[in-house]
Length: 500
Image (cartoon, rainbow, N blue to C red):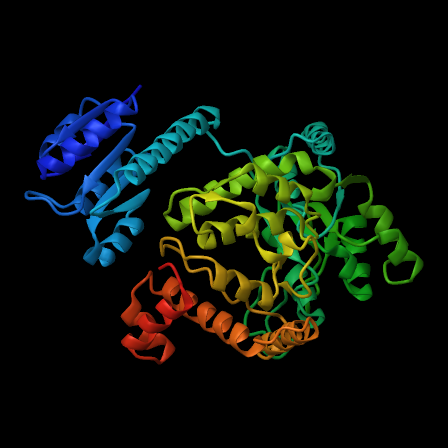
């Protein structure tokens, strides 16, 4: 077993910790300065490092940076005085596992070191399990294995594929995998969401245009078909394509020729088309909203991507992957899910599918108050077991009420990202006001007598935490951005009980 390393210029601190950890059966190695510890790192490494923040010859923060450069997964606990909270924030930003205020309770210190040791063991196990390369797609469920097998069977084919599945289920990932494992892998993969581009611009986006073809066309422009020449063109949300463009797309698929907008010379297309939709195209054909002949052209091979609720056994591995990736992006230690939190995740239906799970994991990486995520730390829509009334663009389901609840009841982690506590809604700048009104109506109908105080506290908490997140915990800068004074933000943090 690797030992716990302690570095502190105070002999009494080293002595007390060494004796306490020895009673717990934990091997300990002590250093009085950072120079000796760094020299020891050349030959060995600890399981956990406990370092004072201020020492002659080098600070704990400098040591933290050097240690993290060599051993990024090593849990480092920084010891600091109560008056050193700014340094504690810097320690978190540098990747510290936790900070230990002095004077500390010995039993709490041992418990914290125990947790760091468990994290180190878990990190080592994860590293052993992880492949050298991140997999393109994750899934152990039988339904996903069927998808993987289909991708394998199509690996030597250029046939047109139609991918169906709910929004957020990962249709573009399947399309990219089909391209990567096809004879066209050396060519370009070009994706376009036909529902996200206005009808007047979509034709030019797909086929390009000649100079002077319309007002503003000051130069010849290559369309997506030309950009994907020799490769793969992924047409997402094909069910929303306008009928007149469906006719042009059918012509390309039929004879391999098309014209730029305003052009007179035909262009040959050497492109594999993969289309995707969350809609029932057969029903769209019956409604007259989708051409039947185009449907049959696209529906050569159909792959159905199952929603996440049909492959719940994949939730744990996906959640761990997303938490790890979010932690890497934010520069913090990855959060881990308790058994109860994982059970709640697995029981949720995920109307936003894998994209919603990814957003929740990113939210937890920023908002969960401790390294281990408990069930009570999950977003409100999971705790309530139903989808929030409004969805954030991109598939994240979270109402303003849920965000305010979370902001008021949870502490901020290390300020290393910029995920806001208040989501932006597609319904315009006043959508959040309507959401708050609905939350007020709910509280009033439930007979609550302190609605004003509840909503004001939650709103203020969310504003302050969002500003602190954007400024990486710098209170003065956060106060300036909010237009309030330094003393005001300090007083509000205390009044609202925010653990920052």
